[in-house]
Image (cartoon, rainbow over all chains, first blue to last red; front, side, top):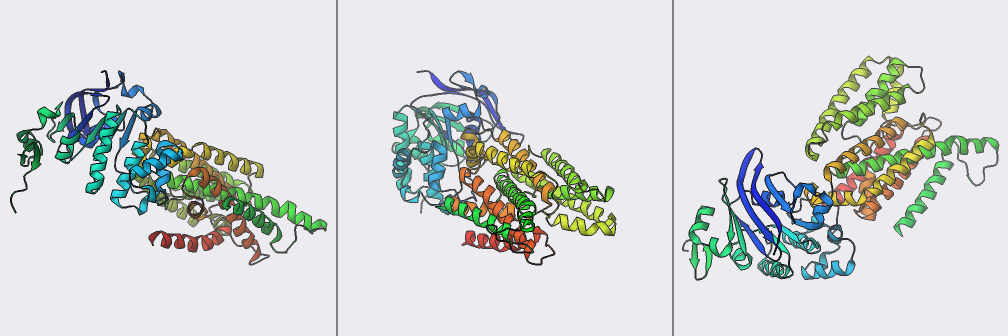
Amino acid sequence: MSSLMNLSSLTVERGGQTLFSGLSCQFKAGEVVAVLGPNGAGKSSLLLAMAGLIPATGSIELTGHPLASYSRNELSRSIAWQGELPPTEFGLTVRQRLELAAGEDAEMLESTAAAMDIAPLLHRPLGELSSGERQRTELAALMLRDTPIWLLDEPTAHLDLKHQIHCINMLKAQRESGRAIITVLHDLQQAMAIADHLILIDGRGGAEYGEAKHLFESHKLSQLFDAPVVAQGSVLVPDYGGK
Amino acid sequence: MRWFALLIAIAVCLLLGLATGEQWINPFAASEALEKTILWELRFPRLLTAFAVGGLLALAGAWFQVLLGNPLAEPYVLGVAGSASAGAVTGLMFMPESAWAMSAGAFAGAWLGIVTVMFFSHLGANRMLLAGVVLAAFWSAVLALLLALLPEQGLFRAFSWMMGDLSHSDLPIPVLLLAWAIALACGLFLSSSLDKLLLGERHAEALGVDVKRLRQRLLLLASAVTALAVTAAGTIGFVGLVIPHLMRLLFGSLHKAVLPASAIGGGLLLVLADSATRTVIAPAELPVGILTAIIGVPVFLFLLLRRTQ
């Protein structure tokens, strides 16, 4: 299957500092790539660069053409980016937020809101929501974007356990429907549950791409996070020590 | 229903604006030539000027609030009022006898302020706001210097203009009304992008908005509209700050509703305020900026408390 997006020798800088360099990989339809790494390593910046929202050196190609050759409007039809919504002071409601993502198809909007458990919140201003409710609203806004590529920055952040599981299952379903999903995650078990490939960004300028089954290894992840990660049966978990 | 109420409000305010003043005149029963002259040659043009200027200020306020991502922004936040006032006083200083020197000076001063602010438009919203606040302080200092140098006989005219004065507008009314309509049309054309900008610049870009271009257009549009309003009627505060918030409370946050409601609501507030200024100490007049502040401050504080609760 041909790739939707290619990164070649990608280098991302923020504030004059190189976050990582030399990342090359391909993203195909119907696969999930999890981005892992310590805080500040450049995981979110990678997504922003892939969405064309910040500059990067190296090459990013979307369906064979340089990302820079697309207008913002064209990019928005191919790539949906989900990140934390900044505080908004102008009274925008949940329904209006969803309409901004996907137009005014009321039926679609309401079914998506119901799927993300936010149907009772549709008339509430965004400023009055809890962090988890805002996150679910953003996920619903993402679900309304019918783009072949989704870029998600910590989609399970602020969610309770029920909604974390719901979110991961929703991403699995989207993968089955042929979407390419690239997502930053902090939870190793969630990454193991969903990722076909991994991008590991180490925070020291390095980035590695490979199949999840090869990179999910306790020694490698311990090195990546500079923290103990141990195998418990078939899963890798952080080692919090005894009680 | 709310739009219907706004239509009723337009009719009521226009009738009040026509009827009130030094002398109460029933617009439906005016029969004497003098009454007709007062109604249609004095009050009606002034009422149209007030409506257009109020609408322009409210539109500019709504745009600046979104452009800067700051609910406290208003048309004068980037120093345009200060530069326009400095220009007006300069005009008065060098051509004290000229009827149009203040307006011409204000227009030139406003554009000088706008061009200066444009140098900072590539910075993010917060830094542009900071630059604007600093520039406003600069223009205030220039204005203070000019007022200190202004001959005593010019001071009353200068202060009266600085507090808002609809009695000496030099701009033709059709120009103001056309500007009101064009500004509203431009705003409606941009309304979908403005809505997305409410989500923050990054989310707006991700939804397909060319934010850099939108910011430049918006800054130019809001500044030009402010310059026109200031040239027509001096600096009139609070209309541009309060009306967009009031209309968001009544009509929601989406700009396809906020902008027309603000263009009408701002106009009506200024019509009411101007009617009051012509009436309360008749035959003398208060500067209209005093009344808009007296109405605007309590309304704004109410909104602030409501939002906090």
